[in-house]
Image (cartoon, rainbow, N blue to C red; front, side, top):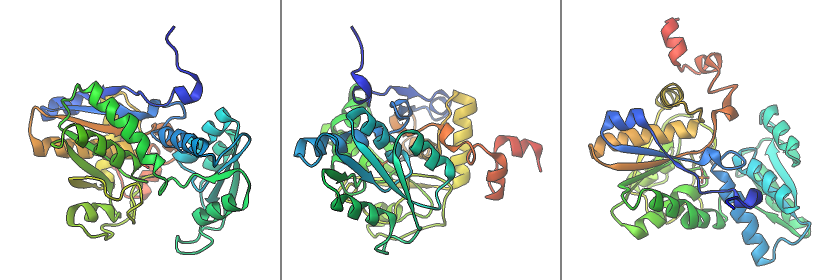
Length: 332
Ligand code: PMP
């Protein structure tokens, strides 16, 4: 029989999808690793699973325990699923400014959502610090702490990297990835370079991050204004990102990301979120710089369905000064 063992057994082993239009245009083979096909719909299923399994193995999390995290994003969604699958309570602490859809989704998944006032990271009442304190005060409870918990990058070293190496039969020339916690790019790059130090590893950043300047010039410095992208872009070097061997970085402006997201939808039939748009746009830049006959892999992080009211809402984009093929053709 061929089957996956429950939710946990269904995480990972995602296919590489050849992106036909941009491969033909650049003369390279450009592949997107379909992380949106993970069981809760994003690349973060890997980290959510790994963090919980590591806590079980260390004895920090026992039967009937609780997992606390500060995020309304894909990690929160992944953890809510993993907690159901393993019999844990899941508490998500988030700033009350988050959209009602995100709160509703987490609640529908069975997580306990605790909205708190939105204050900056340096404030002791920042949502992430509240999550850490809450976990500390409760028995049999862990703080997932995705940014600095190294189980996150370790799972990409153990799974994402080897899967890419296997599926490209070792022919990969460049790996391109965005970074939120840094787990995906750090773990995957470390593995690929251990197999072949010549694999070029490239960070794909939105505008307004500090990591692009860090990779380019070695100094943590925010460059560019804010971005509509979600889940990626960092103003600090997390424990997961620290020490990663990243050769280069591309900064992708929002319009380039939006253009790629719509191109992927209309040309390839792939409905994807903004971080996938940034990844693929950066992969095209890398392909152009390397020239034809190279194999480039990037990550298709999550589905466009998570962004229907924004990235796929031409009015919302218009308010941000961004065009879509539809608004361009109307010429308004
Ligand atoms: N894309 C999306 C949509 C995400 O939510 C995240 C994680 N926040 C990433 C990309 C980046 O993954 P990582 O945390 O492994 O850097």
